Amino acid sequence: MRFALTLTLLALAPVGFAATLMAQNAPTLGAQEQALRDAKLKAVRAERRSEMLRQEASNAASAADRIVAQRAVLSAEIAAAEAQIEAANARVAIISRRQRAQQKLLGKQSEPILRLNAALQQMTGRPTALMMAQPGHREDYIHVRAVMATVQPQIVQRTNALRQQIASQNELRSQELLALQTLSDARSRLTNRRTALARLEGNARGKADDFAANAAIEFERAIAQGERARDIVGRIDTERLGSVTAAELAALSGPALRLADDRQVEARARVYILPVRGKVVSGFNELNTTGYRERGMRLSVAPEAQIVAPAAGKVSFAGRYRSYGQIVILEHGNGWNSLITHLGTIKVAKGETVKQGSLLGLADRQTGEIGVELRKNGRVMDIAALLR
Image (cartoon, helix red, strand yellow):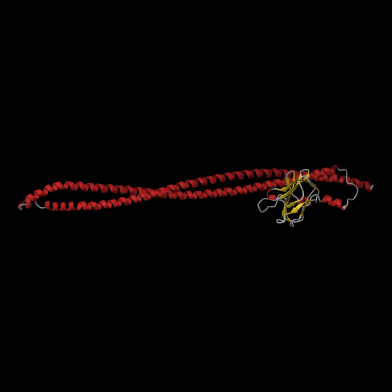
């Protein structure tokens, strides 16, 4: 009787365990699916914000380039204004020399006329009655008056011409000085404008750098949200797989009443093994030196260590691939596959079927590192969860 009761309890135990496990997973899966949706939404928002900031950074950079072009134009205008100022200075100097030369010439030409005029003015300044009383002075007086009447208009005409020329030159010099002042003011304005544009250029560059930095931060946030969504998907798949396994256990008729030997227990426990013994350099989802998260495990191993199959499967690829060096991809079935990278030597070929623990190749002699990744339907899975 006790033996029959024991059989009944053993038969019902998987059903109760499976039902409990499925009941516990139901709310957990719902919460994680909601978390997944939230993570995806945050990732999309972060990507949109990153793109918007990149566009703003590009616009700011373009604005800075336009300011640089405007600054070049203004610099050319300033150089032209300075050249005009130098030309104006040269013209003023020439006019000043001509003015001094003409004033000197005017002095030389006016000197004899002025002496004659002074003598005539002195003579004419004497009283007429006194000059008429002296003998011979009447004829001299008439002669001087005639000479004065002849010479005076010429003196006035030549003097007026020279004065007009000097006045014209003074007017020209005043115009040149005014032009020089105007150009000097223009140069000051252009210099101030160039300083302002340089300040604007620096501000635009700073804004572009800020936008680029913010875009990089948002991009990292988007990556983090994407990785979080990937982790949630992986946990959901694992828990769903556990639910399926629990349902399959519930459908079984019950365990056989016989003891399993140690080899069978060990074979069931070691569903997945590491391809080689070594030191863990970086684990799943850890940040590597390049700033990205690891999609598997990196192991430091002895040079030319033997690399074995972590699980039974079929070799779908064996050879060199880009910067991963020599790699081997194993298909385990039901969407599961393993990727082993950075091998030194490969001992298997494409299409070959291997068992767990079969030799795949040797580690590299120099680097002494390999990478191991496990995927389920293209999604990266945590190897450590299967090694526990």
